[in-house]
Length: 265
Image 1 (cartoon, rainbow, N blue to C red):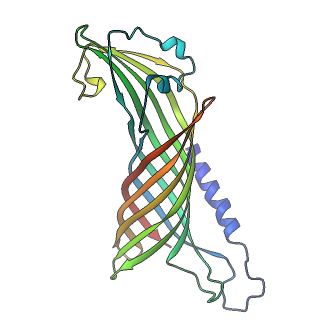
Image 2 (cartoon, one colour):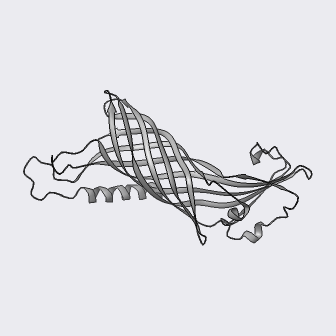
Image 3 (cartoon, one colour):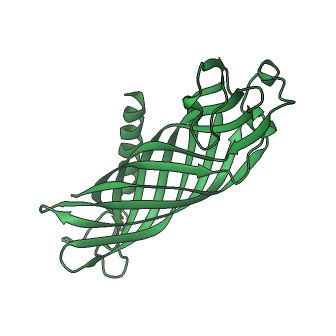
């Protein structure tokens, strides 16, 4: 609830700022605000990151006490999972800008401000030995809270289809940080570690993680009712991951896709 409260405070403060008079010399009947509230948007979907490369040393940077996680890995082969994914919910408010020349609002352009909550995503480095009938999996698990801003251009096809594309920026921080070691019998490398037999689980403290991303949001939607649109939303990102006390790492390939509902005000 505190995250949702923070979002509404964020949007209310933004709306108050955007609603300030922009043209003090206006005449009666002309718009007086630089921005007009346009819509509210909710997205649900999958958010993913591909680190490009992952290693045991990189994994240990997430740990607050990597020494406690050391194991004898001399007879094991290494398998790396560099891609992570989690479910997300995104809530945004949008505003149309006022055209200085025509004194009308540009309804084909929008400023979007909002918040995105992402469920825990898991990065893994796995060590396996078929001879020893054993496997050890090192995991980092954390969710995200992101504040998003984007400027988009939108248009219509016919009377019912709506499309959009633009550019955006987000900044976020991790939640629920954990380091986990899963130990068990050997399993097929194509399977998930939770398929191990006689699995044992150890948990350790992890460092805070921070993100900044540049993004290209785009999507398409179909009119539902008088004021609603239901459709698909996508986002491609490039950004930086900052592990507390460590150097920043570029995450060049990440994004999201989901179902979107827009309500026009």
